[in-house]
Image (cartoon, rainbow, N blue to C red; front, side, top):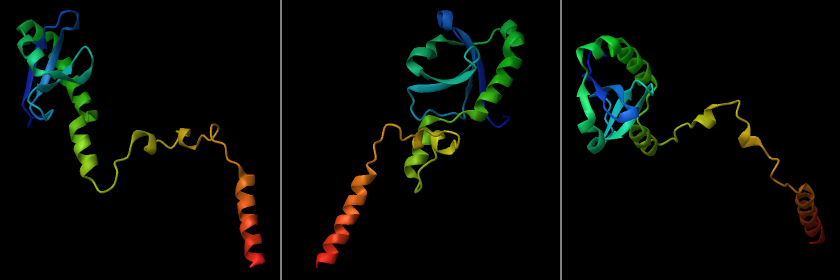
Length: 139
């Protein structure tokens, strides 16, 4: 975390106001968007730059004392699990093998094997095989 530039601030957004962290390493891929770690949501969220930029401010000294350790630990935890959607999309479209989805990697999910709503008529398949054998015998 020492290699990345972090900015600690406060997002003034009425009832959704929150201390936030902005990292120079998390790039949304578009200049009109930015990612911020939102302490109240305990997540890294995507924001429109044009909307939030004017609502961001530096933390006051009292806020630094109150929120700094929570911001640092929360951001560290959230950034470990964070996958930037634009990066994931670029990776999965440029890769020769398809990216694993959460469903395919979860072996306990049996929804792909649920055949309750599929009707399979085995008699039809057997009749087709029987007819083809009869046709061969007639020749």
